[in-house]
Image (cartoon, rainbow, N blue to C red; front, top):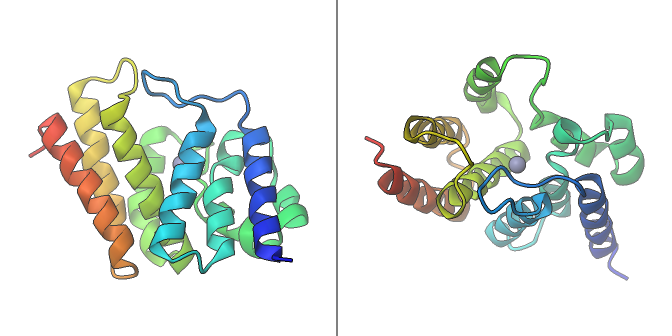
Length: 182
Ligand code: ZN
């Protein structure tokens, strides 16, 4: 029996249930779980499927920020390593949005290797989504701001995984061209 596969399937099932009513902000309003699976797939490919904690973190990375899951729930179901990885990539929602964005740039450098890889995969998925399904109501300026900001956050995550960075760079370049960033 592969314990890793059982854990991974359990994390996918839990993530899908937790985010069941949520949709992505894009005009296509994709089910939220598509984003989570894309992030996990990016991480799996970049690490040759060698790190199940990282993949589970990818599937669960928005559960603390966007659902009623608690840190203790994650510890109980998936263990302290996965729970603390998710906590590391969770913004403090009590802070204003701009402050949270600034902190992501400032604090990412000191985070763990796994948290940095997860950030790169998350931003890659988000940038791809901006092109294929831009959020309704976002102006060109707001879209460009996001593209620049995502790249600023990823600058603090570099030097760990060339394959993942290449996937990000491709998404970033496409988005920059698409939205006319300088
Ligand atoms: Zn995300």
